[in-house]
Image (cartoon, rainbow, N blue to C red; front, side):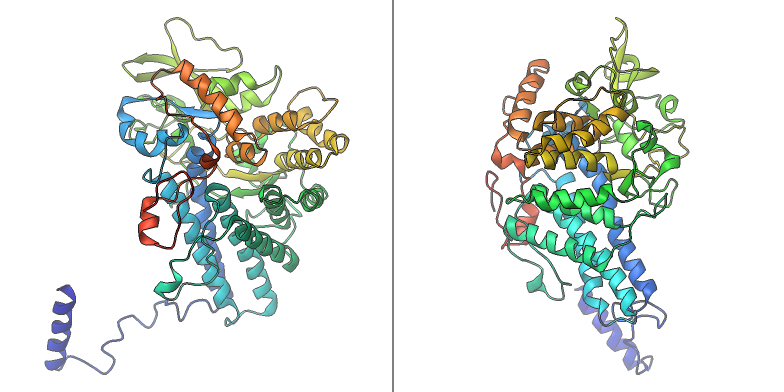
Length: 515
């Protein structure tokens, strides 16, 4: 009806003599369209920035879908969160399914949005005005990003559709699942080409925050160690190459997360955020602090963090606190205790306390919370400017140790394992094995959204999470009996119902309902 009215109005205007020959030129000559864009270096710079913007959503999504999926973190139950229960709590309880939505939908859609932006840039590159050198630079960076997005899809959904070109018609929009092997083959092809084309190496710090040779080789190593047919030899070479670059461990573990140390010498790839009201902020810390009515004492500015998913999420578990070795400096740099009072679920904050050996006084309540990204006082409610680490040098050293152990090279793995332990204030170990490398990685990368995929990659997810679930059920009788039933099917997420209804070629992952 609206289209009919618009058509009649146009005809009427023309009959009154108000139509010129170019009446249907509906856009100003100064506007940018898909036909006038993707021409200059500035255009492709904007296109790449648009793709990088899609990386930003992984921080909060990962907090729920990776950290709270593991034994590192849980949530503070609050009566007002019965709505978020269906989209948030169920993920941490392994009760999610094809109807869960929100976090799962958002991550999936944002990843494909990033892929779409990269594909368009890649397909338009040859016809642009860029020099060959400029095209090479754009192509390398775009291919890294596409590999990065597909790696996240592969590790969370497995056999996803492979979209490799700009979508120009409906038939190209709805592709079937590729095999997991094919997805990894594409990831490795993209990142390998990016490496061959010559991504820049980090030569000075702070870096720009964009893709580098170190980031690409780290991504390729992760892919080689995660794909169905592991290639530890290739991963070892890539990780050794990273150790020969200009990265180094920060002397003080807490300095990694300092606002004044963004993109520092330990950073290989991190998600970029800016404080302020420009829409480039990070709200992770506001989600992780306890729900409390006087959070201005914690944050320097008051905000309502009771509503929906604003506070009390990705809370360090007692299991995690107890797992740190005595003397491990990383515990106090990662977790703090908010002590106060709790009257009918209204927590009032009073003071911060150290987590090691903490016992609440008889008349007090307490909440653990992550402080890696906690840098008050803040100037904007529900906004911070902290970057979020994706790959960093400490993680590379441990990934290399893991790789070497898998190859039977325990003696060669030991120095990399002990370098990380030494920085943490811990004594050197005399042998490296699968378990102590995994334990070290848990504490080194705590609350950096790695634990869940690390457990899957090392084959521990089912045993570790079922045992953890049994302990949680013993502590909390409100957890349903069906929670924490972790099976092979639960190692990937369900394709959400909306995706299955829109794309009839998409086949649901085993263990979930198809439509």
